[in-house]
Length: 137
Image 1: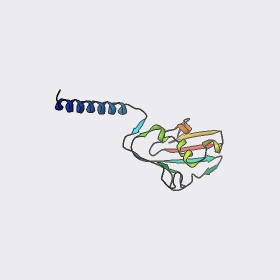
Image 2: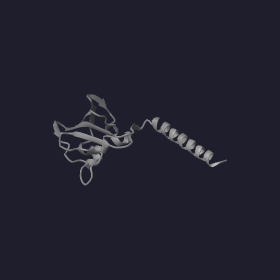
Image 3: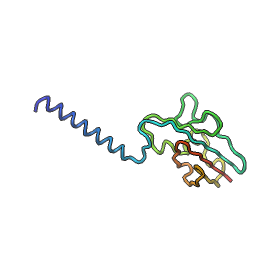
Image 4: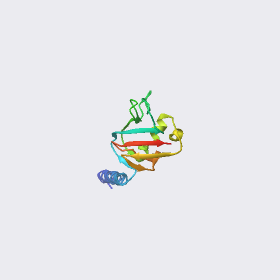
């Protein structure tokens, strides 16, 4: 075998491995995006008849976390680079960054997303434009 054949073989192997890697990732249902996202959802929390503000500055500090808030309007910013998985966008990540467990508002909870009932709670995967309402009684 000469040097040219070795280079051709190595090049072919690299192409096959890259193609195989792409196919595996392309068929991964847990991946939402390959090149990042910049999405926003809104979160409203009600305890009885009182609306609890989602504070400004969640996930902000020395470095900006991919899930954060800038103001107290309930607007959740989701700004990820690279590959984004379902688990990155779960609602429980907002509460994790907040440092406040979701159940700290009470245990009797109902949830709607875009006016439809959901029982996913913390495991809900947020999407761009979602209007999430958590009601605690």
